[in-house]
Structures are given as structure tokens and as C-alpha cells.
Length: 315
Image (cartoon, rainbow, N blue to C red):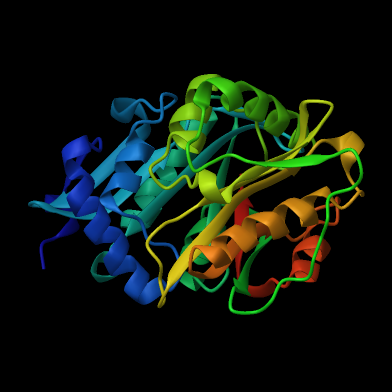
């Protein structure tokens, strides 16, 4: 095997996408995170207008093979944390325990330090190696997240919207001009008090949320009262790790003044029923285990059950 000193370190490029997809696939065979991405999904990631590939990314290559990567996002003001730099990366299983992950993490910490921010990294709970690298770098576990799974072969209990609220599907034909700004405003208001969340700008919202190839407007919906969005659910579809199609519920948000009225359950049930009708086999979502709004209980009442856990590390 090539010595790590002979590896090439440079920024990620769009033409790395096929090799990047192969890296994710190789890592998933070992890590079993349930996360798979198509080449189109990865191109969407690189199209984030907030991302400067030359400054914010690292590709580590053995010849033409991508053996590791890291993306470190620009600083943002995160609720409950303050200024943070979020980072994610993967090292190919054959190249682990050779210092590559440690070097990438050090780069992220230096980037965060230069910005006067904390570094934020999320790690699967079962990944003892990544946790050890974070701990050795002086990071601390700060938040736990639960991945939940729902078998869509099971019947869903009815969950009507409260009086005066209309549920509106966003597809199949999504209207960016009609929905993007009201949705973004509702999202930023709904998540302003959620730990680790930061406001999303207009360009990033369109590129990464409603303009992403994985976005499924036919399985997304809003709840409106007096013509204004008061809650929403956005659905996405990535390559499924198991048999049958899987709907990923990327975001469930309710304006603070409308919480506790059953809107999230009503919207989620509406979206899941549409997924059942379209032949989806399962649905998954991720929730903050310490969420103060009671979101975990809402999802469990719909029928989701815990599947995996991950941990956010900070320094």
C-alpha cells in the first residue's frame, strides 16, 4: 500500500464526484450508517453557494482513487452554541488508523480557530474510531441524535389538521416563486431556538433544500392558516440502503406560536400517506434526542422507532 506521505492533498473538484460516490459506498459497507448518495446528490452538495471549494474542502488521493475527503463550512451563528464551523468527512476503510482522519480534523480545528468559532462534527455513535480521534483532539460530546425508522407497510392512524388550518401539498410540480421565500422564512423562525441550528440564506435554501435532486415536493407539504405557513414537512429520496424506496423526512418545522396543536403529526401523516400511495417501503428521519419541543414523542406516536444514534462533538 502507498505510504500516506505519497498521497495527494488538494481541494475537491466537481470531476471528483464519481470517485467521491465510490468512497461513500466503500465506507457504508463497513460503517452501516444508512446513508447513501448518488452522484447527482453529491454534485448538489458541491453547488452550495456558501461553499468555496478551494478554501473549504480537501480531497486526499492515491493516484486517481479518492481515499478521504473533508468539507468545512463557513462560520455560522448556531442556536445554543454561538459561532460554529461545521465539518464532515470520510476516510476509506482501507486507509483508516494511519493518521489521515487526525490530520483532517486538525485542519478543521485550525479553520474554526482562525474564525473564532467552535468546530462541530457529527459522528455515528457506533464509530468508536472516529470518537477516539475527536476525544484525542480535545473535543467533547455535546448532543445526541436519534435516527428513527417507520415501516410504511403498517397502517397510519388518522391525524386531522386543527380547525382553520389547511394542508397543502407542494407537488408534484413545485413552484419556487410561490413557496421558496415563505418556506425559508418559516424554517428560520421554527428553528431559531433549536440547538445547533443557523439561519439559512435564500441562495443556499434554493440550492440545497428545494432545488436539490433528492427533493420530493409530491411528498412535502405545508400547513397554512390565513394564507400563512405555520408548519411544514420536506421530503427527500436518496438511494435506499435496503429493499424498496425510502422517504427521508429532512425537516419538520412548526412556528413557536403554533406548537402543541398537532400540526406536525397531521402534516407528517399526510406526507407519509402520499409516500405509501407512491409505493415507498420505509421512511426515516433524525431528531435531536434532547429536543425541548417534544418532537421525539410526536414521531413515536406516528409510528417511528429508534434505529441508530449519532453524536455531535464540539471544541
